[in-house]
Image (cartoon, rainbow, N blue to C red; front, side):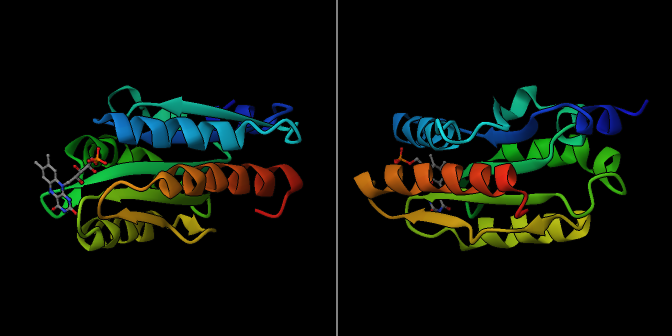
Length: 164
Ligand SMILES: Cc1cc2nc3c(=O)[nH]c(=O)nc-3n(C[C@H](O)[C@H](O)[C@H](O)COP(=O)(O)O)c2cc1C
């Protein structure tokens, strides 16, 4: 049985979280997304965090929804996040159309180039953006952590209840 079909028959829904976290601040944001998605009231969703370098096409094929997280570097998503798409794009194309997703960007001062790039690639994949992306721009703010927790909670709750 194909990987995606067999996974979709599992009891719990799989929420895949791929994020590049090169700094302590972004690591805290990643932890917050995981915390939000692991809320005690969400019983039917498993959040699975995988760093970009370890992400394989099979991980995406077996997910019910995806959260991406990246820094903006040199006006674009991080190289490691781009590498995920470089390695996985064609194996996912055709098989992950319509998969619900959202993302966060941590940008020192901008974020627009990264947003454009993610939107462009995921449009090509025909992924379904189900939640407004979170752009955490400028000097690091404690509220970024709360926003990341909300992002994880909201995606997991939506998946849990079948809204997405
Ligand atoms: C090589 C390099 C290039 C960067 N380029 C950009 C950029 O083009 N736009 C931007 O908004 N921030 C840029 N930044 C800032 C990073 O996005 C930021 O340092 C990162 O998100 C970590 O955030 P933190 O300082 O809260 O840990 C760059 C950082 C580095 C190290």
